[in-house]
Image (cartoon, rainbow, N blue to C red; front, side):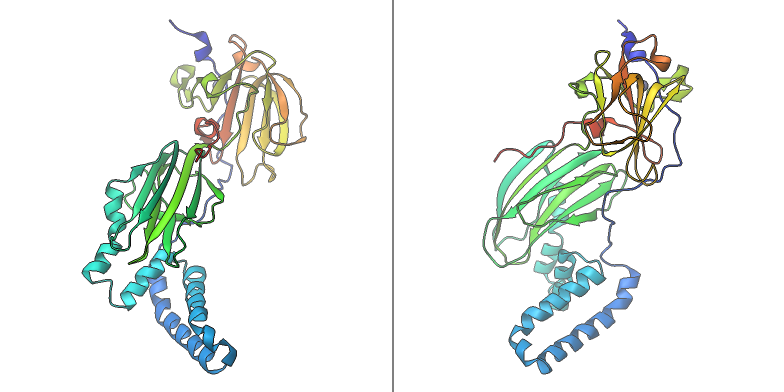
Length: 362
Ligand SMILES: [Zn+2]
């Protein structure tokens, strides 16, 4: 039995003029040729700093160990873009430990754990310990689409002074190497990352050598935007992104969300609205962020029965833009909202519209 509502149409040609922006930190490779050149200078600089602290500043002498530690961190993290774990590996090397069996075992622990990571899709929480006599890493992995949001809460439960390295890493589809997205703070706060590149994501935890550590980690993934139709959910999406239109001449560049005529459709971000009428989309609204379309995604609402906003209106997330109908080329179909996202071209809205992530109760 065919359902005419699933064959509806609408849409908009692709929009290559939009500059793509990514809400994500830039990957930093720990070692590259440029950094190798800097290293001798770095060592000399640190040495000079130590000498200055020890000879010139009497009052600082007793704090020298701590100060040089901070200096090392400043140079390594802020100037060279290393992660704390990279710095520890550098220290093992300086101490001649990296080539020892123990050093090798430590350096390869992430690779070993990565062969069988804990699958942490949906909602996940755990409390774990590292014992000082084991050399291991813990890895929690999830596969994510563009537009999803990953949230996490990470805290240290022991009071030891040792370091527990924690980072979020990404491996894009068809990639073999992992790259660091961000380091994790053991601060018990809820952090989030909106996914701009589909792929595998993992949280990697590893204590420094001979360290005890106990931690708790909670994570969850879901959508990054509120649902654009009042009272509707993902289940009301009747026609998905990418299916054929006009006998295969073009693709469906959005999702169709079905609800009663007159149901309010709402803004998914703070921004401003531009209204219009066209043969294909009927009464439609373009919603864009504060940069007037440049540098941010644009959101397209088509087949409306009526507008609640006028062109140029500033709107807040959740505000009503108009009411669902079947104007434009949806005139022979039941009322639905055609919802599109354009950011460097059309993007599948479905992952954006999953329910917002919620950490599990603990
Ligand atoms: Zn559509």
